[in-house]
Length: 171
Ligand SMILES: [Zn+2]
Image (cartoon, rainbow, N blue to C red; front, side, top):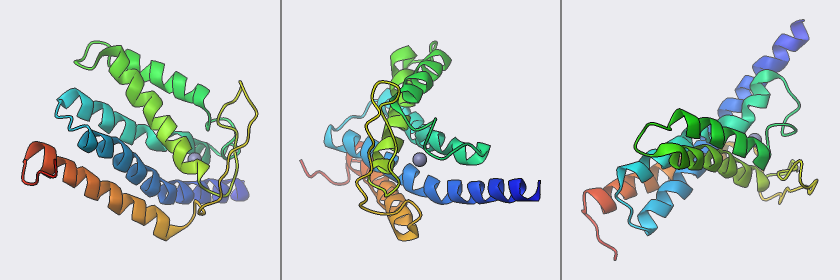
């Protein structure tokens, strides 16, 4: 019982460290795309925000004490999350498709981030058992996680400055 409690506390600690990197990467990619495409539409911002919020979802296995990166780290979970969020946003301005993009995109962004770490996993289950793990950095690397968070926040600030406030115009 004591051991189990300790394992869940350790899982929570790891979740919080990884979450910073995943939120940062999601902001970096989603708001980076909005900057590059000069998208001003509020609906697109909402989809990007949903994707960012759900970019930590697959690591819920750490909180639940499930084997890490086994059941929650694949595109099938992405589709399930997409459908669930799509239904949730059915009667809003972004509709089912916007909600689906946010949910699926969030899980996909998570898998992209994890793909560059050391611990390989199978992102295409149950369609393919292909293992992915490019071993560029460790998921526990604080510098990498904090770095992505800073970069993501910087790009989001840039998005507001360039696209909305029009204070800079690199195009
Ligand atoms: Zn993960």
